[in-house]
Length: 412
Ligand SMILES: [Zn+2]
Image 1 (cartoon, rainbow, N blue to C red):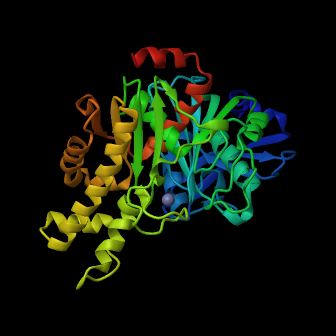
Image 2 (tube, rainbow, N blue to C red; image 1 turned 30 degrees about the vertical axis):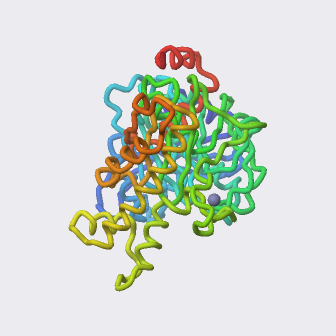
């Protein structure tokens, strides 16, 4: 146990006791040895149990299914530090003490926490649900527990923390704005609080900007100095990188390209305006239009509508054509306004990119009349479901790392 104590010095700031235990995973019945960390004087005063390293992924998997780690004496301890899924915890090739950037992706319903290396690879990832009603301090303690568990498990060391968060956020002060999925969390400052607790530098950006930074460094926008990364799912978000730098509006404000108006006679948008790009081209817009057509049952998701279109369903094909028309019009506007080297398209709608891309390119060609649109590559995002975490790590690099210089030179 002494080696564990030495491996994670941050735990020493609290009066902590580490002891071994024999455990059995209740669902599988596999017996294993592990260790227990009991924090006596930490703010959250609790104990966390960890199985020995080879068992960690299995413990996490069982934890996701609601299993508990049971001690032979019959007492059960739910491993809350590992609540959620733990993925990518392959430790082969990991050097003890290797420095990593922690990425935190705060979404509408869950928080993903991971450690990301210099190549943009996620070494370890833990997802945990957000309990909005419990407030941000509970979430903060959960995040810190996960980060400490990840350090302990992998032997990696956190050098800095990057956060991508559903907006609005203030990237300069680190405060959350009035995020509609996080009522009551306004003015919470995870940047200053995590920095004070873990004694590392922390940076935060709007999640669309984080995705853009990630794709620009390690994804489909690699090597591009100017790009617009557009996420199309339940809404449309976008991050703009110009000349290798993240573009900000006045006082750090995030431009909301998803809410530029494409059709003034269009539908009412969640933002209160009519005919925003998002209200016409996101997934729910396709679903609503499809449901309104005669003879069509309600409740089809955009993914299902695209599957029906592939199978030749006429109304579904019309829905896809309509969606790609409006998506293409907005992209053509972005190309005309910014003339970036690349448009990178991500989000759940791009799982059906094969149905959309030809139309999108054709609409750009037809509408971008006086800019060299041929020089703008339209590409599908490549970082996949980890884009939020990878982007968050690049938020830190972009703000603090010396490799920011490398990033700029890579983009030449
Ligand atoms: Zn809007």
